[in-house]
Image (cartoon, rainbow, N blue to C red; front, side, top):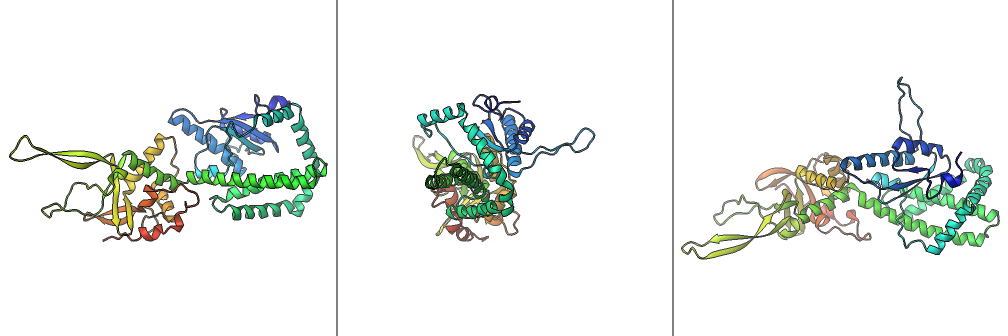
Length: 420
């Protein structure tokens, strides 16, 4: 049998990410009703190793959130015992799990070296070494255990949980995922019960408990707001918009002018035309040298623009603003390549990603909900395009107070693009 000191200290934590997903799943099953610290989430290595790390994170974190284990079969094809998490999982690490869904199933707190005062940390470590934390937790559980059945039967905690969840949803409407409100309410229930215990055993009085509740509420709102930022940054539609912006600004891809242009003879110009503000749309400065006739020593230098990378679409400037018309396959391929190079897994298919853009009113993608692209006539030929208000890509707002796609009339502007 492990002692608490041997099994749970900074040098002997119960689980770590170098173990297999199945081993960690079993450990979380064994640590019933206890905190299980899983140390050092730090994806490293090549693309294959990063993919394996992501799968491990998916198995552990999603299983923890859903209270489900990975089903298995024995050699004789009978169903093996399934191990699911019965612990309260705490993770330390240097990186975050990928994807909006997994982030919504975690509660993240970023901690730097300066966040915890050294004197306070030393005092807390002394309490651990002296057994204060172990004795306090044991006393709390002994106080709570006789009340559990009555609390469940009265549904008091269930009602309090729903009340706090609704309260947090009202106070933090932009967290983006309902699971965050539920997690915040669960934290509150745990803290509230501990406050009742501390008052009951006369460790603190009710006035001090109220002060601590107020401090806790401020901390929860801070955590919830920070969680919302993490989730928004991991949303597929947000990643796509920022990815296309990076592709254009870095010269990995470019946009052409969608309006048909004609040369001096009145013939349609077949050469891709640089749009207005070409430097932001994948074009770079160039110089075209023209030899003047009749004088071999005279050379005229005409400023020009050179397209870089691959063409991923067009831009159409209207009196009301500019519309970016992405070619569905080319834009998604370049976006997928960019994300892969950064070790980020694109979890949505091409059509599903474009459907999300449409659902969020960020783009006009089609007429049938398939995400395959809207029929558009460009330079006399019909092509399918994903039509996006240029400001979502060229001037994506980072200010959380302004970062609300659906309230800025994007759909009305994009809808002005016709098939004419």
